[in-house]
Image (tube, rainbow, N blue to C red):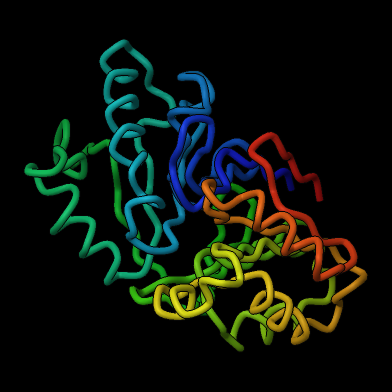
Length: 261
């Protein structure tokens, strides 16, 4: 399994891309930044997008992926004609009502035709496995103000977890501890320690909260832990506070990282 970091930040500033992870070239975990990081040819291979939740920083590039795929079709490309969006049913309903509604953005679930659209919506359920392009993906409910899931990925007997946005939770760690060959986990760490109240209200973690959460992980200290969703404007302070926790095999992601499992 190959996981390419397209964006790993919880805010958008010049040079900092929003959350999006490309798995094996064809599967996206969230869509904050694929069109600003991938060439048109690289975008052409994307067939599936797993949306953790519908906050704008995780869905915005669904709009532009659809637009680019539409133009690719008009240019004569027939392979990978559609992109399937996988998420909880309540998230798909939100996308249809408030995003792909012909007011905010054209409804690419009906363009060019209802029978042959650019985007297809596919509902997933908590802890119900879905297999796409050889990768097994299981949604895990997270602690966030809107319906949100992290994802357990498995291929060739190796597991990996993406927490998506989350505050304090137990479900994530129960799933992680049950995996026989877990090779790593991407965990939310958004705000500096002084913003602990804001982190709790908004469903995120500070370095101290993250370190406390990691004590629930049986393999802590022997397995890679990757942090994401850092706010760019506080990145220097966040880096110092994460380093102060002195957790083995833990580091903050950058958007040039590629993880090979």
